[in-house]
Length: 132
Length: 132
DNA sequence: GATAATACCCAGGAATTTGATAGGGATTAA
DNA sequence: TTAATCCCTATCAAATTCCTGGGTATTATC
Image 1: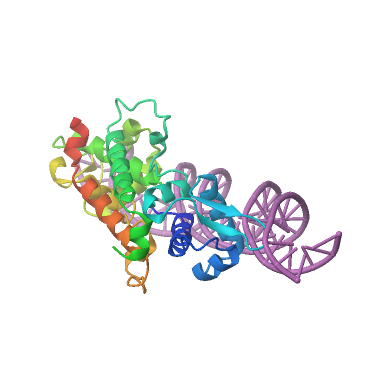
Image 2: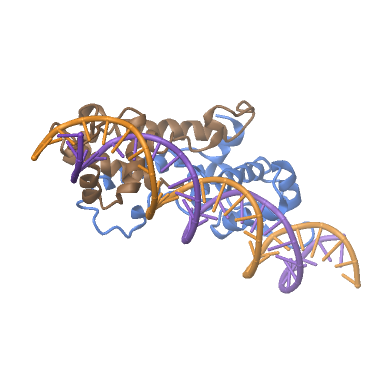
């Protein structure tokens, strides 16, 4: 059970945006430099975050990316659900399980899923960059 | 972040062993039949669980697999850590992270790791097969 | 209006991981 | 001796992951 690189790296990028919240947009090359990611790869992560309304961007010269809401209003849970395309640890949590009722293990996955989300939703991006 | 098939199927096999705890050993073909897994695949899962001392086996005719401890003394956490080869969600939790101190995100993974283990260690195999 | 800096879109591919199969060997009850 | 069983290890196809590359659209600045 591993988190994908997308999740790990995307969260780092979000931290970078949070550090500079309120200072205008950060360009892709700048964020790539700070996070040691290739521009092309980072671009894909940011496009996912943008699709899910966590960040926004302005195009053209002097354009870049910025958080859509202040860091204290964005949770790590939101970010990871976006990047990981949901945190469902098994497929049957995604709705299409026909024998929830009789399955011995379904309850375990459901409980774990709730705990994971609870934990991650309890951490804001602001706490992350400020350390505690 | 998905649990592997090994984890899901292995837990089902453990449930089967738990249901028949105290009734002697269950043969590989029998467990395979009950869980709808191929014998060869199931064999690999059971070998992992045996290596980690959760189950034991007797060889030869009338042999089979059985739990090494009663179901109430085996947690789902133990089982999944065995099958998944640890529940570390990111590699840096497995000891070899050089910049724990400065990394913004390390704390998130550490906390989540603790929560996941706490949750799964709180569910016994007995609860699972008896429902609640 | 031209230029340069930027975000945006999408195709593809190498490497890794996963899920599973296969064959043969060792052990033991009957 | 035989048949039923667990044990070991190699291999493979499919899926997924991680990343690169090329080209397009937009816009501030000169």
